[in-house]
Length: 533
Image (cartoon, rainbow, N blue to C red; front, side, top):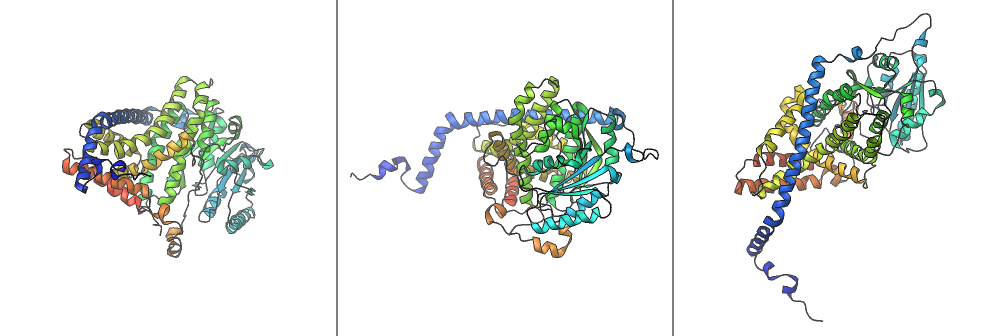
């Protein structure tokens, strides 16, 4: 057999010293840059600028609408028929409709007492209220604790039912669907859902139910989340800023303009007839709440958001739990959009403007474009443009419009305005996870239906002994503590920043190096209350 020469495997251009090789790589870069890299990067810039303008117009539209709503629109109790629920001595409690309270749980050791206690303390006639604890726990000890807590309240005269299933089919959607099939539920007109960490005020039902009783076209009354642990750490402060904008602006605008918004999965009251007409709970995506809301809206039902109807809840305070939650919240809507877009287009019961709002504004811009433009533009395209000076990004696209969008996003949490710059950097890091999840949902890839229950810590962190117990959870070093993909982006951005310092004419390296620090902090898991070992 003829010996293969070194030249056959390695062309002459790749032989020589390290300096020669570096020079030859540079020469190849120059050869492919003009005909290939520059046009591709320039096209990417135009696409990102177009997406940024779409997001800007959407944020500006919502900002204008929310100002008009606050200044000129009547409050919900004036726009809709609303009368307080009063006790009547002649008919007793018959004037109060039967209400079902569903509390889905899964191994909620730290919070089960709080949620059950809050539901049992609701100010509603006990003979017109059914509390249903839907326990899918796999830990026998926790199941026993939850059942005993239900028995304790039952002995106090509360109509509380402890329900378990043979398997977790359909996850939360499956549990809620199974709960509505029980015989004792057939007389209930309304159902209110509280996740295991939610703590409604006693007057929650008395404020929400009248909207449903006196307005037959309303299917859902959604309350606003408030967070008991917002000040726990920087991670929870960042989440509060994002979610406050969602509730202060997005939900309010949807409710006021189109009587439609995405059900938040908890802290809301549904008309059971509307759930049944929409086809009931479905587990085809990880956002069963949004799925039901869209289907009910297509049947002509209206939704009402009450910003002053607040429910206390808990934010995930560990980075691992937060990442799993964001994967579900980003993947699910994209997957639902894939499944429902043609159904929305073909629907004949809603007008064309509502269809446009749901498809373009609600799904496309907020659930897809917002994640992609944040990641691709600020973490990929802009850094790459520093390596290719032939491609210029206009200042209005790189600085001015992003600053306006960020300012509009900050209106929900004025108290955290001093954290705004770090919030931008952190959102860019999370945009990587959200973009990846969005593509998984759109393509219905392997993790499209992954469901990991968000870990709740309740009051455990306030107890020093418990904190020591949970401070070192077992888990793999990679994936739990060290995130290679985030660290890889930190290295890439560091290289781009150094190149800009040495050869560039812009000042973008200042932003790039700050983004490097944020990616590195996230990559080593130093975010949240508990750092995994």
